[in-house]
Length: 116
Length: 109
Image: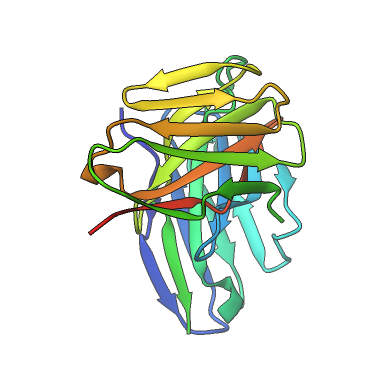
């Protein structure tokens, strides 16, 4: 069983550019989450999908951020007009919709974004 | 912002020692999770706890869900060099995980 995969693993961009990250969840996991982690901190919740429906977006997710999960499988996170403050590790996680295990989230390796 | 306080912030271990860390919250959670993260990687789930008072083991790891539902602790017995890393607690009442800032475990020289 393959785990959560994320691409790219690293992205360096100039301020003002747009970037897009991809997450492939564990197959048959219908819940998918995006988190952001800065140095010395734990991950912070950004948004969550159940199948293709985006059910919650954190206040951390400004207008420049958009996430999609068009077919209920992989997801993309796009950041427009990047700012230096966007530099962070972007983590994707997935879980099953199972009432006994629905809080066990499995994380991918993350995408490290550096905005110059 | 994060609601969970982890202590200690960092610790040094010597191979063979037992290690303890804990996590407290101002809010009640109905699920506690413990993760380990290595540099440049994503967090790896170690233990999940679902009932207040529950004590759960995974190999050399033991974790407890506090009776008040506002705290949890993690013990590592007979530590080995690969136990170094950052350990995070996370609490949740639904789908959103709230994380602590982590406990960094380093090998004592």
